[in-house]
Image (cartoon, rainbow, N blue to C red):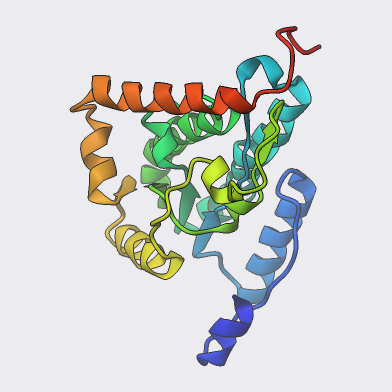
Length: 236
């Protein structure tokens, strides 16, 4: 990404960081503020999923997902917010998901984190108004990304002919990241509290057809249980 930006004449530097480690995130943010003399935006966009029947998910599975999807975002907020308060301006943008508005059977840890991010973002948004700090929460539908290819599945053995994206619940047709980025940046420019897209997600947000969506999700969960290999013992 940094190479693509610089290739177009922009200024960008890539630097790795483990968002589950608050000290690494804080160091990255503080170094950036020192290098450029200000911190205009903080985009918190890290995440991955471990799916499976709730009976097969251990606490380690939960910790691994929440440490990135929830605490990784919190670490970014904790690092950026004080800097922005001191300078009197800045915009924090947290990536949640359409999973924040619907049940996600078979993907409970991811869904839990994404629900939490909405409340976290909206709470800090109100706190930051008088301090000059803006906060937005992004809730996209299916966007083509590595989150589906990198998803893990607990307690199931999937047939080799099932693509990883399909096993993670992704449809064949997804929004391309370039288009999603344009939608997000347009929402940030308008300082929208919630940036929800595509339109079908915005409609679904109001639960116009809750019975239909629940039936679809329940059918998907029942289908996935065909591949379950674990017994019915609750994991320790």
